[in-house]
Image 1 (tube, rainbow, N blue to C red):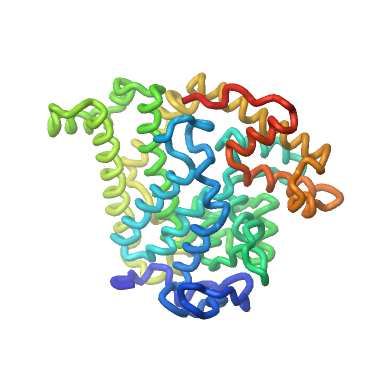
Image 2 (cartoon, rainbow, N blue to C red):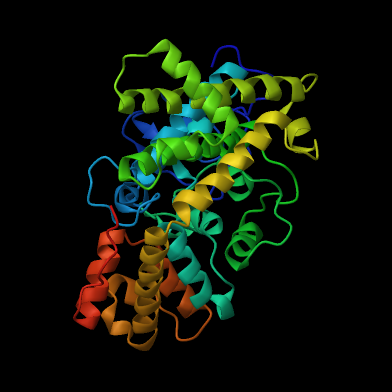
Length: 400
């Protein structure tokens, strides 16, 4: 990489891999892939991480997992997959402008939602409740469990065997973790991730890219579904200012194009704000270790944009996420997950053979395998599984 900043993560000096002697054959390099940081062939170790994520089954299943709308019928609504791709695009732009490692940033963006169960946060709430006596459930920790234990295409080790830097970023892209749940604590015991420090700038950029993407693209989907009205958006002063600028520049454009321009413009404003604020925050930093030891977030919004972003989130919860139709669909989705968990807990023969073979005799391990199985489902597979078990199709989950 050219123009690498001194505080950027370095693929030639990363923290290693959990299974250092793993030797999966690389079809692109034509030689065993590096296990402990050695780079062979045309790809860096962070590029290998990204490629392993993209080629995983867990990543492919994101195409049928809820982003905002539960099991939508329309082709144009975002799913976890399209959201992850949009996060990665924003992340690469920010990483390149800041001199960070684009490949690590992209890999983190693509992997950050791998632990989400079907039906988004509604499904997560149901699994968390079902797993309350067995350590709980959290999609961030589940993403790490997915890439370290569940997604296992290689014959000589569990998981994708990603670099320490990638795993560290997944574990704490939202900041240090002082009280890890059972999943994260177990993985940290096996391959310590220094949970008490801030992660690399690449991980911090992945987190803020996620915020930028869903803050704005959820507006786009909400308008498309008719759950948001343009006049509602104009109640927010900073969006009203942008809207007046769009109308002035494109007075004769159709309304829908003006609204899409508003969303694009807001993304641009947020990206530029992050660049300006982050550059100011990292002035004088000369290594990635200094970033981790800084004791504070370095990549993020200015104070003014932070307040705008919080206001926008409150607006979205009020108008979109807690819309009566959304709440109703979420309740039905939680019921599907709860019924699946109850069924598999009572009768393991309902699970596929490969999953039933993983079940230990007792809890909490047994409950965790059941949660792993359900968490990996797509929306449609969860609905079909519930119908197959109970003889009736869950109704009302498609709200757009």
